[in-house]
Image (tube, rainbow, N blue to C red; front, side, top):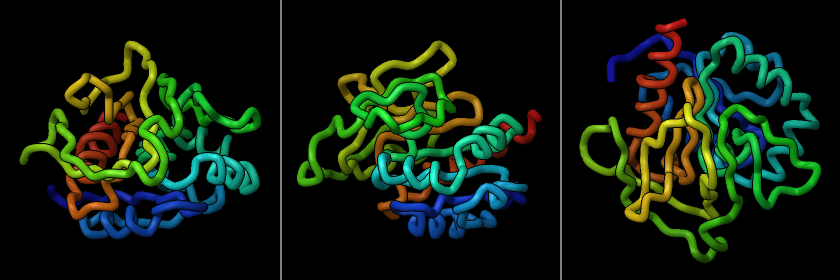
Length: 203
């Protein structure tokens, strides 16, 4: 990956935001932890980390982040969600609390905790269209499933049974697993090069 001038925020309200930031720093991106609306200013991309989607949603509301985040996305900021972050990006969330508001950044319906309980967590090789070097590493912790998706959503990764594991729609990238909990930075590099880079170049 060629270094580029990109400023990437990592939502730091709850979850594995430190691991995401370390991985992005290692790829040469300028990073910023984001907790308040004004910290979205000037970002090329934003990572929504894994964690607990209900807790993150509550904190997004408390911090007044919902509409500013949607507005930044509409202005061209790319967004990358892993596990809980992917849940928040969906238009519809199965199994969500009645008061949990989706960000609706992608035309997908997602099912919470579809891979079982915390004790059922596992790490596996994840095939990925467009990433060289073979399957990427992914950790699945109470992972969601993409239950339905619109015609403009591209499936980038799927399990042997055809279950989507990673999807993209324009400036939005969402994965069901945690790439940041491994030593494999290729998913983050894909976000920087192919989502942030390509979309910014086309603006």
